[in-house]
Image 1 (cartoon, rainbow, N blue to C red):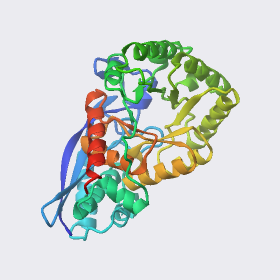
Image 2: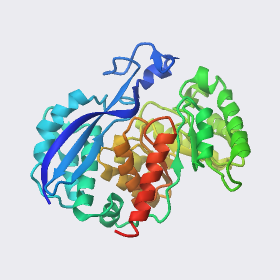
Image 3: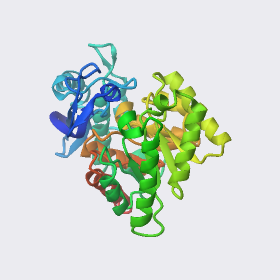
Image 4: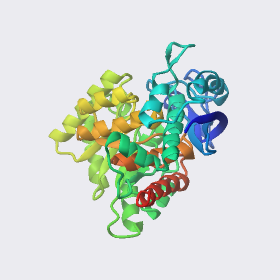
Length: 414
């Protein structure tokens, strides 16, 4: 089976590009917009439309394999690649990437993805933007699956010596700023992990002493208890604080651990996960900070997960964080890793180190990238997978749930 043609189609994502640094330093909400000047290079406004590129491999038998190039909401922050705009990168794909694959034989996923992962951009002398590698690798995986009449999950399981899960992976739903109404949606759908909650600004959302998060945790605990559809529904409460506890507690790691302890008590009987408690400004200090917080939590017998996110972008980063136990769970922020093969390797590595693997990503992805990730989750069995794209809950949860269920049922007959 050969790749007859490759077509690029510009697209939108399920959310927006946001200038994280501008938001942290005071940009204010005005409806769905932000008022203020952008700070991160490439941004023309603090919030702007998310963009993607669909890459379509037309196979010689008429089937079409499909992957979407997309980048995270907070592009350019925390050591990530810069803003990804379709008009800038479609010409790059057409000029540089299409010749690498057009007319070539569909072989194995590992062989095909190595082509894009190892390619050097002649304009920069570096590997290609993570979003390009992300989308092209999805198309490669889909092409191999279609050529072999299997699901993408089955291809991953075969090539990486894993087993397609016979149960659905726990889904983590994210609320965005609408952390109250959207939490109700999550409870109604019995999301196993919730609600993210987007605590990314100290004065407005966290509180100068962290009191606003405490109030929210108490409200959420009571809301789940009151409304849960069945008695055995006991979700994990997972909040993302975007490094804001660095500011609240001046990077005093023991105080941060003690504060997390107060949240654990408020969350009971539900388990608590705190994502990104600090942002130390670079990878090395971030590893030291998260590892220190984890040690304090262990010493104080505080039963909470710490989720690594910022400065943990690449497969190399993930291995370093896992080795240092800088977090009890590590987010594999799928678009940041480039090729989805790296996402597979990341889940496998975290599990080998007894670290929770959170197959995450961003609200700023597409339905297609989410479907591919659902297949990867079913093939690798991470601790949880993000409901994506978007911040509306219903759409992202539907996409991930339905695709995993399709894989589950197709695996019985293919």
